[in-house]
Image (cartoon, rainbow over all chains, first blue to last red; front, top):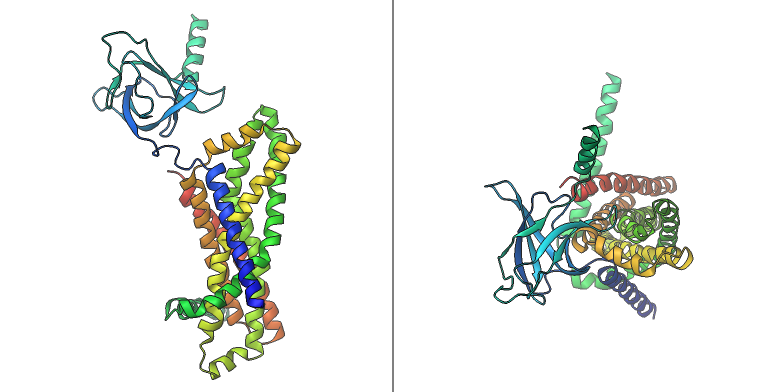
Length: 154
Length: 259
């Protein structure tokens, strides 16, 4: 009978571990938030990406629609090119859309703010592999302070 | 000349102990494993080593999570960043405190018991009588205990982290009034499954192997006297705690160091 008790308690132990693992994977970690949905890739060229990283969010009006895939330097003109994978659910952004690099809060992490353009006849939607022309770079605080001091001095 | 000989003798002793420990591990685990036959024995040992450690793990996990939430809140609130309480508690538990504190508690609670048990078996010549009956004590006594430790400790570490995060929620959200939604959602955006959770599990598996190995070897290698057993038990706790803390630094540097 003791072995039966042992088996039951070990079973309980295993179940408890699985519960802990589930809690950690579902509630604590962002398990597979990207990659589950079908995505398409858009590119954007910036002058300066500030503190943007791979896996940063791409947001339209605060709603996350995708993530930054990779950040590379274009070897020809030395500007960073950001590849973003956007969920296929949102595939009707017009070509006049613009992107800018924003910061959530004063000290928060940086993300790509996506501003959809006007829908006008004769303008196509953005599709796989397109470049977004209209981009605004990240605000670099040191540059701003430098400009401020410079303008004070003159 | 005398002291030179002493240094040599001490180091030779250490080396030969390390060799014996490796032979023990090889004989118990690698050579001719009897998986199916030993399953009930392993189950029994998981009960002794794992299930009976649950209480101390759950209670200390709860309190460590609660204390971290309390300490973190008083500092974070200076910067108006109470929202970051969730990721702070979760990351420090998953990456460091979960595996390390569980390993230290496990060394004290289960490792010492393993050493004392095996040491006493040796002192009362139960191991020799097993050998007389043509039963290999390495496989009958050592292997199930080793596997039970290696299986149980990562499970305990996982439970420790989960309970700690719930304890942090208890203090941070229910008592101090951090918003429950931001506690979980900022935690989710900051904690990565592969980088944080899986690396923590890998850490705890490494610690489990080291602790159980030391505990089992110290018991098997103990002097068969009451003094010898007490010395072996002390050494188990001291050596495995030091090994855990040292290895933790190395593993952290490898996992979360410069990319």
